[in-house]
Image 1 (cartoon, helix red, strand yellow):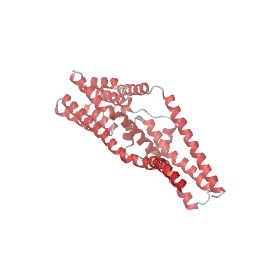
Image 2 (cartoon, helix red, strand yellow):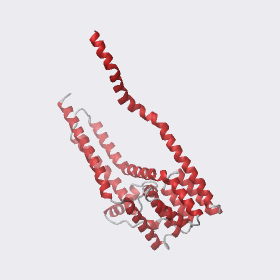
Image 3 (cartoon, one colour):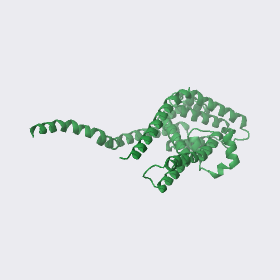
Image 4 (cartoon, helix red, strand yellow):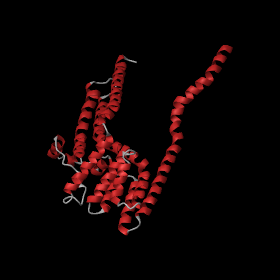
Length: 319
């Protein structure tokens, strides 16, 4: 191997090790800086509810009362250069709501990230692959890699939002059937729907902060929107999951046709519980296939070494 190749691999290894160290520090430090996650989220919900209380006369037909006016550098940049039209993303508000990011500020931050990330990664790729002049690579390959990094920067904000939304939904669904059971108990005890959602939000705060946040927002919307149907539809839109959408549809039908809400909630709780069991069975069934590659790479070589080494030593002594 030539000295240039050794230098290239050592540089790449140093960059990889530095990235892993920074990622480890970020994982350790960020949770320490977050503080009480539940308290912050519930305070955010309380502020959103207060905003709905103040603006309900003008914004009862939409979720505009949940949005805050974004101000700052990001808003000025987005408005000045019309980034919202230039970098338009389909269903961005729904995706932001699914990730737990409400208001205009996260939207402006998303457009700014979609503008800045391709430029930064493109310049970084140009610096690494073109300016440093890595040996053995022709110019076409270097330019293609730089363009690939630029495209990756363009799609990186959307990937991040999708990842956050997936983690948030994964924390909600395991406890969602239990929340429906509590909601059923509250409704059958004589509580109104608004009080039942609020009570369940308080009780489920320790099990899932995200679910408590969603139920608190639903409580606020049930109190201030003109129709309960809008609150149920907003709940389904903020949580893009078949189980939650089915619950929202059942609640809308119960509201429209006057069917008993207790029977609806009992049926939906059973269905979501069965869905949770089916998901666990699916993961258990996929486990052998996932373990195949680790067993081939790690277990079988060691097993062969342990079994065949004594035999090989004896054959060596014999011959």
